[in-house]
Amino acid sequence: MELKRGIAVSPGVAIGPALVLDTEGVVIAQRTIAPDRVPDEIRRLADALKLAAEEARASREALSARIDPAIAADIGSILGGHAILLEQDHRLREDVETQIRTQFFTAEYAVSRVVGALVRRVGEGGGAFARLAADFRDLEQQLVRILTGDRLDDSYTGEEAVIVLANDLTPSETARLPKSVQAFATESGGPTSHTAIMAGALEIPALVGIGKFLSDVSPGDLVIVDGDRGELVIDPDDATLARYRSAQRDSSGLSGVRIDISPTVPADTKDGVRIRLLGNIEFPKEAEHCLDRGAEGVGLYRTEFLYINKVTDPTEEEHFEAYREVLTAIGRDRPVVIRTLDIGADKFSSLSGLLTGEKNPFLGLRSVRLCLKNLVLFKTQLRAILRASVYGNLRVMFPMVSTVLELRQCRSLLREVQEDLEEAGIPFNSAIPVGTMIEVPSAALLADALAKEVDFFSIGTNDLVQYTLAADRNNENVAHLYHPADPAVLRLIRMVVAAGQAEKVEVNVCGEMSGETMYTPLLVGLGLRQLSATPRKLPEIKRVIRHLSIAEAEKIAREALRMETAREVGTFLREQLRRILPDAAD
Image (cartoon, rainbow, N blue to C red; front, side):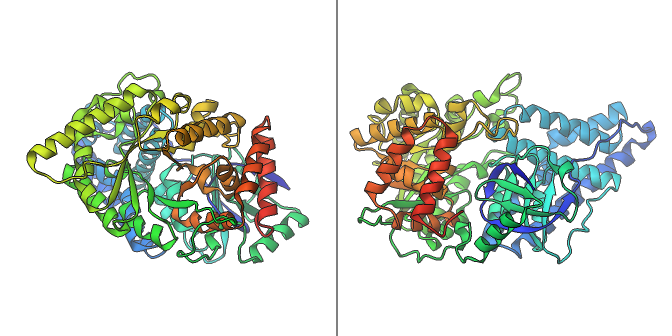
């Protein structure tokens, strides 16, 4: 038996035979054509672009048959967006054609050269940039396979239940996985990739970033994917297999997805303290899923989908309609926290070239830094947020704030936009609550000062962990260092909660940590009374809360804070969860 650890991106446990896929991409040798063949080669490129877009639409339709069509339509923009982008973006298309016309390269080599260079450039940024790099890698593979005739082998579309193991899976490949695929695990990838997002939508267990392991497994080997613990078990021994099979037979299983708790049941502790549970959403249609899973509102509405794979930046009206749709679905009494743009400059046509020469984009121009650099971009979003605020309980939140000055600049700009709307006679909520993300160590250390400037905090544990521990969560080489239970992270969270309590500022946690039941007692014990997570995780979090008392949670937090390593804390928290819920993960 071999045990491999990776990054859990979709919960649950699956047991089955391994199906090993060769998905490491296609390497294209440098080849040239005769000058008189240039027009034919450019036509071949155009045909490939058209076919790639058609395949993307077919993948989207296949996905709609498996999940909620509304969400599938939104996720489908991921599948088709990059192919359509290259089809419509004259700048990128001209770069490929220029390689054909001036260097007489074949279409496939020109695509590989141009898109490959783009992948390398944006991939150096890590974090949010890794998602864009993966999208372009997907684009490159699709086009090259079409141009070379080396089409992806679809022989794994059989009916036998299997677990897919691969070096990596692109979003389009993930969308084509048949229902017989019970789970997947990959050597590469990170938790915020589009592939990870789709795994969650398909509700199949998934691990990424395991590192090299394919040489250790043969097709047909029995494997276990544990999407709760982030473990891949190859050729399990009898005791391990029996334990996992027993857990699968339990209707609760190891995954919160199977927990059936009425959405009307409150998330109250055993001693009657209400913990407010909110949903994290990426697309407007997910608002309905928040209500279905018992959320009391939206704690994090990511707005980056409006920009991804667009030839032009979204208009104010596009922003407004997306925000109004969520507010209308959630209702006037429930809060909706809209996070302003949280991504790098590489996404925007209006900022093309801004990152040229930037040595470390991961620590460079992103989030509020980018917005404060381009006020037109920022004001467009703020105007739409304010206009939508009359349709419900909307709150605005600024991400990646690292200094008090940055926060004050954001608030000042918000006031300017409010004045502009007032002069134009456009209605908005003049008392809109304003919050900031706490996701870099400097913000946590300055939480007492920041609390005097805002109405609420939201702790983004994903970035807080990686910036505190200097470990990129998308890098499998340092994944072992990235751990939410590290004592340094826990102390920062305690500091932020104390600062919020002193100024009577609401404190929420909206990172992956808040969606893992292992951390629920700890977070409640640290003083959190509000948690925000992916909607499908809310029922299990609620179940843990309803089996917990505040005194019990505070004792767990005190014990954890006395520990010196993440491993100690993790082991302790798992033991406590087993004690609180005897039928939970073993």
